Image 1 (tube, rainbow, N blue to C red):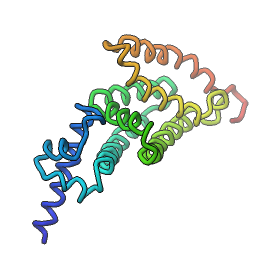
Image 2: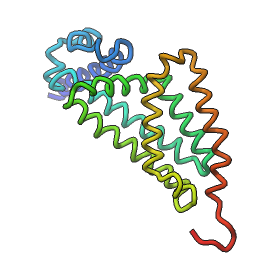
Image 3: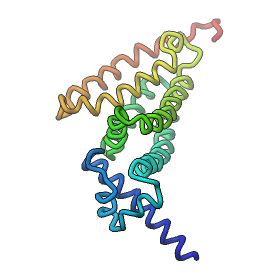
Image 4: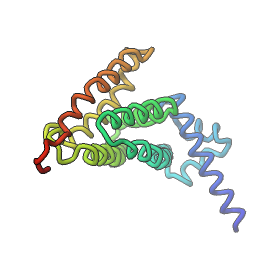
Length: 206
């Protein structure tokens, strides 16, 4: 019984790993039960047995990746104490996800969800977790300041997610990343000026 359980867990892991690989390398259009199973070196019927289908498998792979990324990125973001440090944390998070293929993985599923209502609902639910994360970090650093009133946490979080998704499409027009780097540098230049709006005058409360 224990051996069978280990075998089942190993099969699930191999399918999840293969789903990550196929989605990042071939895009959503290239994913199929057969392609993923071949990459995992298992029978394609196991995709349906363990995950109910290809979309279920891709969402499970996304959930696994999101859990790992959330733990890593939360540690990065929570080290920030100023607007400048928060911007640097955001840049680090973006570059890490880009290099690891996580940005491409999520973007492929978002694009596929445009014409698949059931998948759209699942992706929307999962994206909200990241919106809440950005909102929480912005509020922690600038909450109660004039800057927080000018740039509410929810709006900043929505803008951050919009950039995160949009930059993957923009890469078609910016293959060397130069223009994207320019946008990130702009955020760095604005951050010290924005920090002035987080300062409080002596004798003034919240």
